[in-house]
Length: 326
Ligand code: NAI
Image (cartoon, rainbow, N blue to C red; front, side):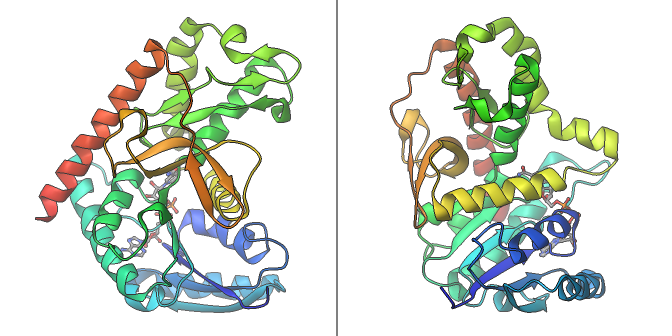
């Protein structure tokens, strides 16, 4: 293809964007032959800093980077956009209540949903990363009825990557041999990283290799709290690994994948999850940006217990966000 695709990135002067923009402009996300036009959105106060990022993009001399446009106006940013990567969100400040955070972000994602609804290309693909990611994506979907529901997703691939890596390290096996680890539910500390359908090539099923007390006491809480552990160590949140996961998510979604991958998408009622809830499921992605929720998995009581907790958290968050907006 020689027509550049329009990729809008919000929060483009932030940490994740700094790691992600070179992956997008360098061909790691959309393929080595796909030119890209970047449309970068920031709040007014961050535009001078964003200009520095643009200088660096120019200085990378990426052959695939067709153009870069910056703005603080969401409608301008989303104009004719084919892919929207929503990193920008209101950060949690000290002493701030969860409700305040939800409200600030619901306001941002309402405005951006409306802007997308009017401005974006008809088949725009959206990934929400800014937290609370699942509920922000839900709000966005609510205010963007023209965007196909299936095209609005949120990032839980970072959680999946963390889980695969931890299993490989725990069992002392190469990462490439570990397969079928999924994330269910919310990108939060209630998420359920599920290894019970997974296996290690040549060694057998993870349900035989890892016992449930290890999962319950060690593995699951470690993955649930990994983001906080990175903040405690780095004094900043995960950015390199988040950008890498956004790249994996978009690449597998748009170009297809042989593996089952986790993405948060609108529920179609699968596994009893309320329709429309943005919930992380295992998916099969085929070329051209199509995906299907994997339907045939058997969930034992152990898994169902975890899934119920994260589903209830999401139902409460989405009700709260909509109530705050009305
Ligand atoms: P950051 O604070 O470095 O950058 C965020 C940028 O967004 C800032 O430059 C800010 O000016 C901008 N921004 C704020 N409101 C905006 C708006 N209304 N429109 C456009 N831009 C706006 O944060 P970082 O580290 O890049 O993380 C971004 C988000 O991603 C955070 O909400 C973080 O919690 C979340 N995150 C999600 C992960 C996931 O797996 N879903 C993993 C890691 C981070």
